[in-house]
Length: 123
Image (tube, rainbow, N blue to C red; front, side, top):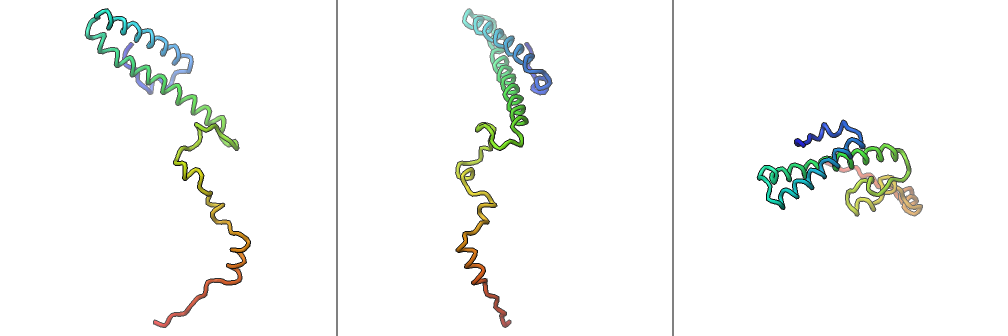
């Protein structure tokens, strides 16, 4: 099988991708047998392209399933952990901007009773 292009793989359905993956894996097995039995050098160099093609197919499959899942969980309150934003642990645990702005009753009273003084400065 020739080198696969990712944009061509994205147009195919999941069943077609799985059949392509099966073909690539059987081809890789045949190439590995040829390697052990002492096959031609062109077959040995083809192992790398087949492995890369397998990786491309698996990447496209996982990306499409993740996109479908994102659409399915869009607007819902909870999302699966692998679909959430990664960021950093500290950022994920930090207060939201709305929670940061909230004041306790004591802070609100203090701000109301003792506002910041404004001074007129002589230049």
